Image (cartoon, rainbow, N blue to C red; front, top):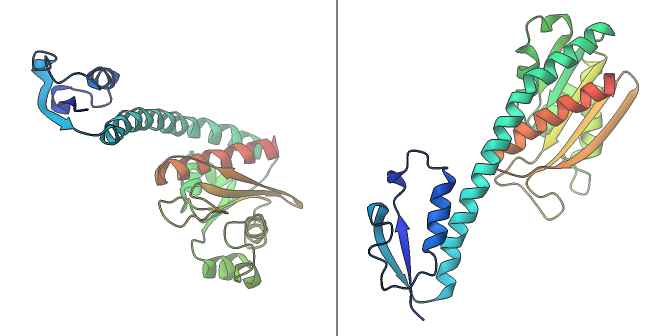
Length: 240
């Protein structure tokens, strides 16, 4: 069976994420080839003839991805807006308890430290941030044991490594509270055991330490942003 699918022009819409585009595109799917010329004539760019239902999967996928990208954009905006408030709350707790903080970051590349130091007066409660992206840097700057990176060892993205990073950050700074993160932000580097979006976060307050594994979704930026927010939320919970 031959089906006609009308392709709408994005240029006719001021907002490319306007859901009306999705609704109109959905309305065109499976429309009979005859009589299509007068439907949405002003927004018609071309007519695509497909001779197999298999080809429709691509068009349906466009609708799905369009809605998904809108959702992730909304979530990213929401998470970004939550960071200053989290930092403000955390700063208050650290000051009240006379605590000093440090960070040890791998996949976030210093984003947590940047978020913390964006707060005015952060020098009163923030000491330093370690950006230890490579395994070698984790060993040199945070004293993470080389054996943890061996072939059959837990590896960089593991509970053992982030706990060692958190402890190393305390030992190599004047902080008594630390957060450490290591993960696979993507788009490459994932495996069956540790898919893209896998992130381990550890928190330590003097001798009290804990770690948790997260599985975040979205693109590289979304995974990194979600990691920053989770790290701040966990630190706030630790010292609250």
